[in-house]
Image (cartoon, rainbow, N blue to C red; front, top):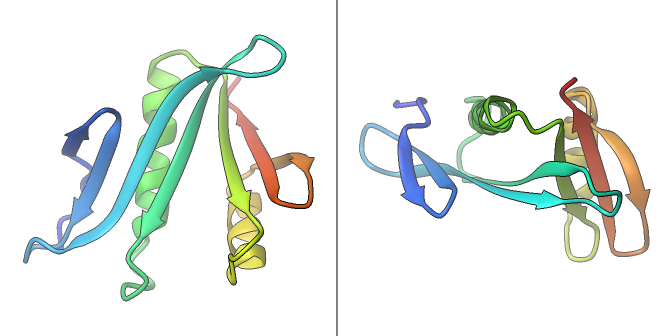
Length: 117
């Protein structure tokens, strides 16, 4: 399995593919400015639910955080959707394990950040 994140899809999208060409995960990065005027790298991850225990999400997250750090952006952010997300608690706890902190929690979403400096 190819777990290197070197398949750039353009417009700040990357993917991890198996040796057979099956997409195992996608990562997205958007550089933005938060409500306080700080630059941040907002990320999104999507992992093939058929693949578990292969560290695809962790590999994508590490790669995206490295991209953000290389661009000297001090904050990485992620939004965890509540509505329609049967894995909300699992995803939330996964990001907490990766040192993300809850910044805003409302009825629809949980906004989490990780500071790099």
